[in-house]
Length: 475
Image (cartoon, rainbow, N blue to C red; front, side, top):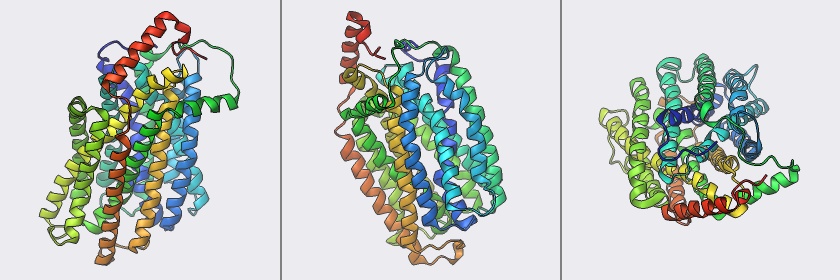
């Protein structure tokens, strides 16, 4: 396809963003409910559940670059990305249902296999879809706008499932197995519908034979060499490291969220049902803030500021509670202050994460200048590799934090000792503080700003005019 010149039509931006609903549904389920479901509902050891999810994520992360590379080199009348978006969602739906409705007694192997299936199929939907951001537009700010839509839909899908879980599927019994079965059935239908609708909505704009020359087929070893070469660019390594640090923190936060709501903050059912609206408001706030922040500080500068500020509002309430400066658990004052801090923390955190994903698209031209190839799919896969490994590490770390705190399986909230919640709170606060500092430290070295990106586009255009075969058209 030919990149859109100027502002991307809103209908195309919406269609591209819609496909990320599936990623949001999967991410919310894995990060928020899966550990709780297999640990507290099915009775599996939290450490075994965490280990299975970590292995599945690492395994899936290794699939991502392969999916991205093959989508880069796919040549059909429907383009490079659409075949994946049409073929993967229906198998994904069945795999998602099986994950939440396991047959027989749950086991480590069964959880591992089903988790790998789900994550691999999500990769086949999300990696090609995310790669389209760099194809649709080359503009520094329009890529952020496209990323904003993807985040809104991703978070919207995940939070819709969270809202339905708290208000419909698990309104009064978060430890009821039947509710999780219904959660899985509805989520499967939502993922399949949104990915297919996204593909159809983008079809006219992105379908068509790729501009690259067909060339000769390369061996698997040569393909691996191309993947390695694309990942070797310093900007790619930096943004992957930044995503890894930021999303490890997010993974710990999401995996611990229900534990904190139930065992620390004593959320009522009404509070749990209202919480998804609060989180979505924070994502809307982040989508408003991100453009202004990037205009003032650039993309790297935005991440450097947002990561630590967001962490302060996440960890602050827990530290104040430990110091005895917080309102009593479960009171209106405690819940009100918690909601306010969550709104601010998630707004700043999502602004930083949204910016990191926009930075991935800007690496495409830097890699093209170095390698002579456009590798949108491969580079997007690299970001997903970092994010999935980080998410797995976050869930694994959560299992260790729960073990350190001494929270046993099948423990009702009113039976948890105060020292257990204090150990859990302080260990969590320390973990995310270290990761926020690491995110800011890594991203400060990112070499692409607005001026560098524009200068690179001009150089690539000059090469294209002088020798089209040398302008990212290598087989």
